[in-house]
Image 1 (cartoon, rainbow, N blue to C red):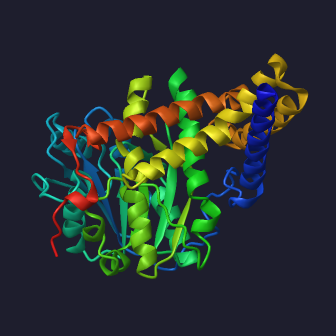
Image 2 (tube, helix red, strand yellow):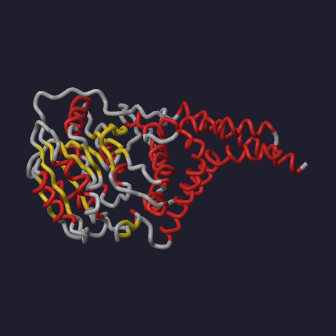
Length: 397
């Protein structure tokens, strides 16, 4: 009797998992589709001035593959690049100047703001300094881009045209991350898939929508909107700064667009599982606002949605009942089907789709580890710095 009750309870849990996948398929902004690319755009009659701000800390390994692409932008208007060397110890600033001398192109200014004060993340302190330098030029737009992002020659032109045509205050593209090693193939496409599940791109650009997010590697921002939204001062302690920036802009009445990139690529390698683990775990618990209840809910949700379907197939095949196996297989099939477009976008073999539960389990462990590291005082550690939770930093008033 007890075994029958347990099987019946697990069947109902599996049914709930299938229902969750049906809702995700149809009711979560079609997050799984990868056709949200730069919106319709036309070239303006007069091109506005743009300043590109690149925060960089110990980026000498990737700078030769990224900075020349910014300097080589084919932009009809006035544009220049400000690289802010955030306390690098590997010669990032000197290398940037050498690359500019060697490649030419847009004017480059390299400067350093010194160590960030309490309450600021290093990246946002560098962004603040770079925006301050840029404002002396009076630009209409700011392009905030990371030091590991390579841009196609027409990237800036396309971003500005899209912002002008659509009336957007922010146009952001999710750079295509590097996928070369085995672990990158397993983890990277899923990273973008999970991000889109949390922040469906279609909803972000819709008028009146409260969903807000951006991709920090490539953010074109109107300069006057940045001032109105107090960016980056208003988000100075944010570890997930791109989402915080988009929320600040929307709170100030601005419009935000986010989509996948075709020719904006991250050149940073994450060859080992350890590298990817650090990338995810450093901010996962911050995404949950350092709330234990949200952590428990997230773990339970990941288990229900991603782990129950394959477990039901195994239980059903082992004698738990045909119904359990069929419902579990149906949920697993919907899950894998929603993952196929992202695998195609990353040009990966489609047989990876059924392995999504394994990758989700890794993300579950990374999220738990993020919380553990936080309570050990090592949360949000990145490049030699560890940041306190937002409510533990002093307010500047």
